[in-house]
Length: 153
Image (cartoon, rainbow, N blue to C red):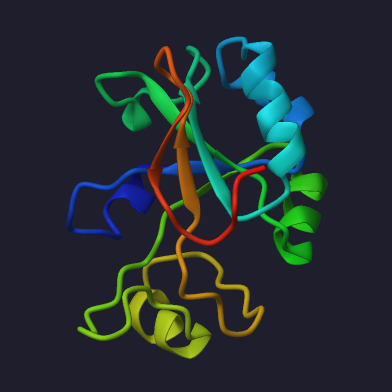
């Protein structure tokens, strides 16, 4: 996992991609009923929920707040991989050096840029260039910290 950190030059936030909500308890502190219901209504979908992580998260990924991003995207490839593995995947966005396009989503461009530094690249076609909506569930109030794709229900 340390090699993944070296792929990006800037300080990054990593999220875990889960196959379903039942996987969460292994990596997060217990969720409130309100947060769990909100996640159940909106996942799978284009959302990243920030929650408190527990001691099972490798120390290399801890931030000062000990929080973790949780994603369950609506993507058949990712769902099949996480279901088959039986554990979450680590993910982060790939920011593009292009001044117009914010995120790198072209599989061929990703292969050219990172192909020598990773074990595998799965070409599922062009990705969506709109970021997920980020919901911080770590404070007293649930707060949307980035409006992106998806409308929270």
